[in-house]
Length: 231
Image (cartoon, rainbow, N blue to C red; front, side):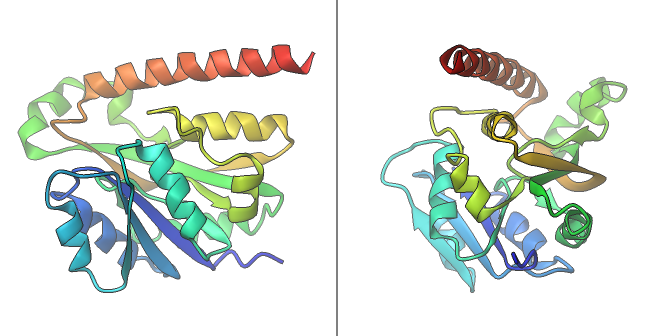
């Protein structure tokens, strides 16, 4: 039987020097501790690597070329020893009870291959004016977090479903969920806000919307292609 508490945290990082320490601390502050923290650097040009090297108990992996977050997540998953993979983006945060609450819900639904939670966006101070513009917008409300900061999966199921699509820059988790459903693997949604997604100068709300649109169109095309191939 899989031990739901045997968790490896995988953090892909690219030029995340400003945020990586805060992300790792949010993992260390979990009421249900992880077994290991793996940071996968995607050829950063800032001080991300130096900051990670100063962190005790954090395993650092470095990609040979810039390959994108999905490839970095896959690399970390390959190195992970835990039976459960939990992903966190380097500029986002977990709330302290994230893993405990997610595992508690998962333990009641052991047929799930993976789980995600709700997520809440927050803006850095220099973009507070942008947050005000979206105060009544869906971006300011809790959202189902089919993203790299709430996604947890059985390691075996993660790879049985082919891992994440490394050709995608965005929407790789949603794509994994869609592919897994076609294999009869369910992903459960824990309806609690357990992660916070940071909006910053290189990750604005407008860019988020464009990325989501592009990812949706790509996933739709992939889904239609798979359906045609299965006929």
